[in-house]
Image (cartoon, rainbow, N blue to C red; front, side):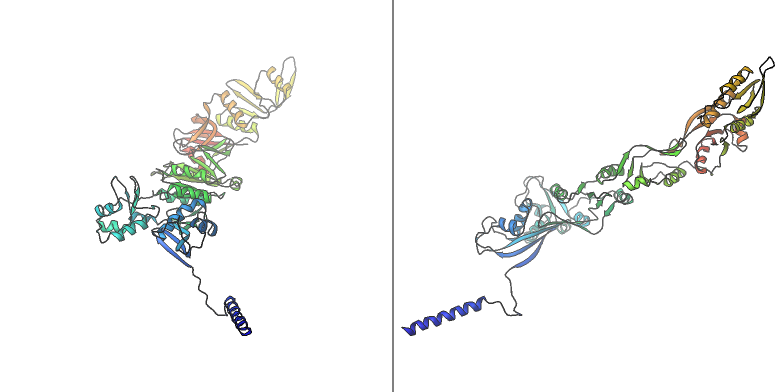
Length: 539
């Protein structure tokens, strides 16, 4: 009996020792092989990353995807469809413990470049069509080549879950190899308008960052990514950080475009527009510029002179650009701008962009720079006296007049200006000297008081009206047919005698233009193209 118990105890000790040996960690240098295999399978434009695993009791595909791989509920359908492709004949809703399957944990969809996409043909499903019938009748696929052709079509259409269930109007992409082998006539590839690239470069000039080389990598939720060729899907980042993804050929499905907008906050703009103006009109409000103004704008040059810019838009990218006076002006296609006015806008910090080609013919030439004649008016009496001298009117500046008021009463006064016109005497009394003005009137003179704050041009206008010199007070606008015009207020003098004395080498028909504006010689030359010779008042 003792021996028997001793034998049992010895056997038990050996069993415990063996169990302890099995639980002990492996020796250093031991190679451990895990029963998990990771693989990548490419189906058309889609890469599916999967893990080979054995189903444990209580597991389901939904639990594995949701709890282990954190797949978003919105993407669950795409992962279930990928599971079906990886495990033909396996029902994802009825997994058995011990069953070995491939479980997708990442889906990467790559939109092929436009060159490769153009080689494929998009076929529209008609009543009675099936994939087999389409491949046989339209593309001449024989029976022995049919399995390979069906697999190629499946890879080219990863979004179609079941090729045996097509519906009328569905778009089916036929791989380029099948199209070329059949000799079928393919529709012309989509061509992006030439102005598309110029719009991108214009946006760069506005301070945007344009990504149109390489690839754009966009994760869409947990486990799903999208790779886009940047040349076909340019990404534009505005000065404020807003981003717009362009899809000119409409190659993103609407649902996928919405996913990009939701996941990344981008604005996806699909399709193209008939002209650059419409295209830019769609993009400008989306990029977060500081200020966008539509329509014409005026730019002050001082003393009432201004530039009238018939702009489509004026854009200020950032607040600091506004402080620095940097504004981008967009003109309509074919708009003409005289070179002197373009230079003036650049001097003021404005950049001009045309929405289309420049006009074939050059704008109106400005001619040689013109140094204008000057009429000094810092001393209003001396300036008015200069005008009287040119007209041949007798006058004196601040003379000592000895007035006889009758009865032996005499007064000595000093008006600002005295002159004689058509047998009558006129005097300009000193400002605020009401008593001197009354004395001048009692002595039989006409008075012309000048208000203290009267502008020099107003003083000259009243004098011209008294002397009967033909004149028109107006605002001259030149050139009237161009997109940028110079506007200067002043007085046009139609007196050949006066014009000839200010400009002895004048041309026939030219008139004087009396103005206060101080402009560059190039801008004054623009006025001369309209037959106007500037006579600038210097205050």
